[in-house]
Image (tube, rainbow over all chains, first blue to last red; front, side, top):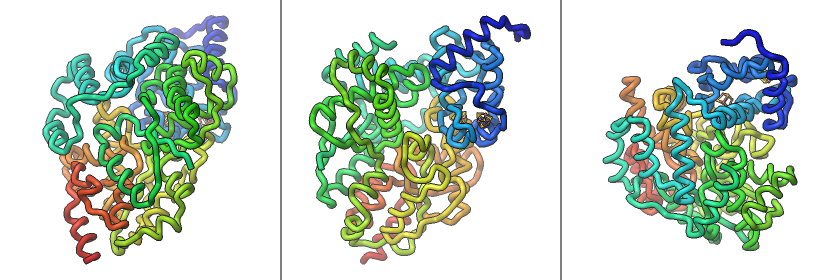
Length: 182
Length: 292
Ligand code: SF4
Ligand code: SF4
């Protein structure tokens, strides 16, 4: 971990985050309420309030490489409870987006990253989610071929897994959205 | 009332029971809805997790199609979809620069005039309690039902503007209308782990297990939900959770539309209750026997 941070780098990082977040990091007074109520705090390497402080301090590398940003399930408990109205859940989105754009691969939470990516690829090619294809591609990419396999026969019997998916007819309009924003 | 319907991907796939029961219930209530033509996926959690613009643009296409077709309101029964549509609508309505960027890309105007309702909101506000009550033919007296809200119906309150984010009661009110007893318990808004079901199953099982065991301790016969993601964690993963923690749960998890349908006198088959993984026969027999 880098301990001496260049002030200009720090400011740039803070300003990038705050612009994307539409909120100010200094609002947070570190009461810890967000972290206390976070359902996945037990798995995180840094608590949500630590992530906020570290971002403010410009600790870009540990923040963008943290497990926390990927483990966050966007339940919004933190933002709902924050006495300062700070966008805690929002900062997790922002940091994930920055990490993604920088091409940072999480060492421990790669599967979550792959899932998001495969999900969006599925939307890009069909306009809608075709669950069987989504799960199949996810398994291939993560080499978790057999995880949850025992659920499949019963799900098929119950009619939960369809063998083909619906597509958006104006698929060009979906392609355009991805061209403009991906 | 011109009402657009945004089914979303889950209701056409793993949670088809939700759509089947919803359509049946609306038929009884004599309410017409129209599926948004050529709708697309809202982008769910993946889009907002890694690409903010996409998380607005994908729902915006659906909203714009609905608005340009003259609709004033959209019903999005999936809690995750309704949360994404509401969030996009909020951002498009409050940020002109963003709206221009998005509508330019869509090549469609959008004035952010639409109202978006989740399932509970729609039932309580648009349909109304009296109307629902007037259709109850098979009161579910003596059945104890726990309402599980999860995250997305009520949080963040700034955008969802629905019910109390810490202690919601809307689903419990619907439960009481059917004659069933609403079971109070502390974890009704605790997260089930939602999106990470495939990528982080251990964490999801810990979170979902905590909720299910808590409901069990409070004596419920049945759990109702209004979210396909919650449903799939609570229902599809229940066997695995029982195995992992070596303790039986055996709690059927059904959609709020299925509970209403049962109280309207519809059969479990008509409501696709047999589409769930956890067997509900025992409690269904009790319900059907009482009405005979
Ligand atoms: S709850 Fe709000 S003020 Fe308190 S630590 Fe978290 S973000 Fe900061
Ligand atoms: S939104 Fe993320 S950080 Fe906030 S409480 Fe939920 S899981 Fe934790």
